[in-house]
Image (cartoon, rainbow, N blue to C red; front, side, top):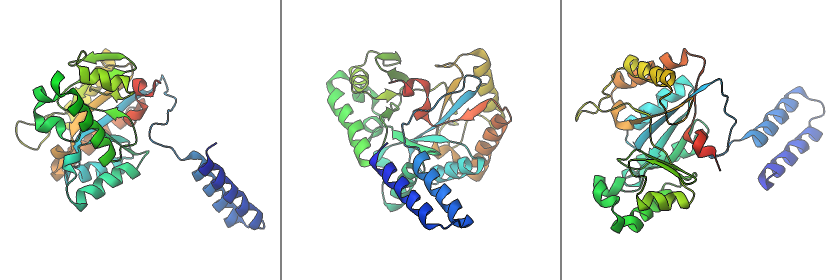
Length: 276
């Protein structure tokens, strides 16, 4: 047991001694003790249920208000968990900093993860992933981790669908020296099984809520995901700036919730991320 947990429990026991059999005080004690012992931390492993189908909503390029705020609101109203991959150079000004702070502090509902500081040197991916720039790209992720105070060693590569965990690397950049180095440093790199894409150059989702829900169900039925009974969905905060698209996101979640096998989780609870 960690020191802060032990201290909290001692405080709760002291409250018990002072309560003199008062019912309200007993309830306060129970709530206090439960909060101390049960508080989850980012990266804590959970037991996955093989009878369930796990859905990992992973939204890239945070913070992108008002889209990030709208997505948070929808997820909170729907009572589901989601992951936001943050980009350091998007955190400009006090409002955007507060958004990142809120994502970091709202665990276990929301998880903040690492999407590089510069978004791959401002979307110049060939340069970012070149062997000559390996150290610079690595430092870009490390800078983002420090400046956004990311609490987990979980990365999504900008512009690249690659997976890496404990030496098992697959995807577009499986042989890339940057990915190999990140993996050896203990970082888990997460790709995606399905993308809710952007409609051309518009800040709008390409697929309807019904179409996306059908695609998710089909992938589960086909078994065509990276891990059994688990699907990682990629989208971007900016696509949900307008109310009509935020409503579409809410509808998408509502459809999926109708199947009681579906469980929404944060990406730190993805099977290969939990593997030590």
